[in-house]
Image (cartoon, rainbow, N blue to C red; front, top):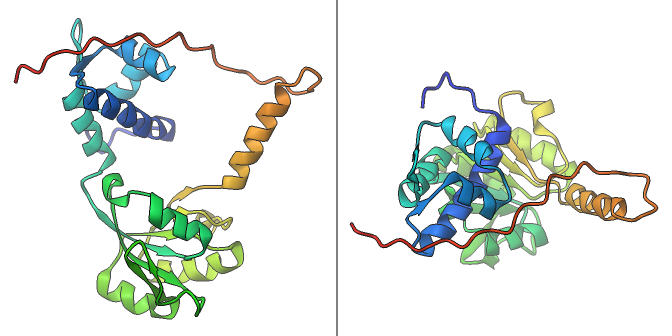
Length: 237
């Protein structure tokens, strides 16, 4: 894919979902799938899937569909899952601990190399085999290990100062769980913001809109058809 091809973020955000469904098919021993069958399984449309995948090249064949293992590998490469970017996590509180314990960084393109906190009661403790380091050693660590990305599990009041240090250390990529918007200060950072409270309020709004007396009417997508059953093809390789 040429660097001149500009891919919209809406397409990028659908790629992990394609990846997940292809992994399910691959693990089920299914080696071929049509865009229509994949769309029905995902509650999407065949044209949407073809358009999205066409952004990265032609992966399917008319009358044959998609080779599941091949497309899975292609999406893995597009997502960069083999890069193993070095990541550090800031904030070993409840959220940070949950992420360390339950997120499989290695299969998502990252290697979690260090965890930092400022709480003396937390520093030196172990989380899933990782020792929590003193945040005061952050700059020295970054100078030596040169991490590629940082996970921010900090309150907003701490996030700005910490992100300034990280930026000065050369880090430009952030998985941001704080409520501090780094892009307002640094235009050249790559940030994936995760606002759990916003997501919960969105759910609340959708539930409220479902009430008969609600003043909100949501523009819902057409209800997807019942997914078809896939026939399991034999691997002749």
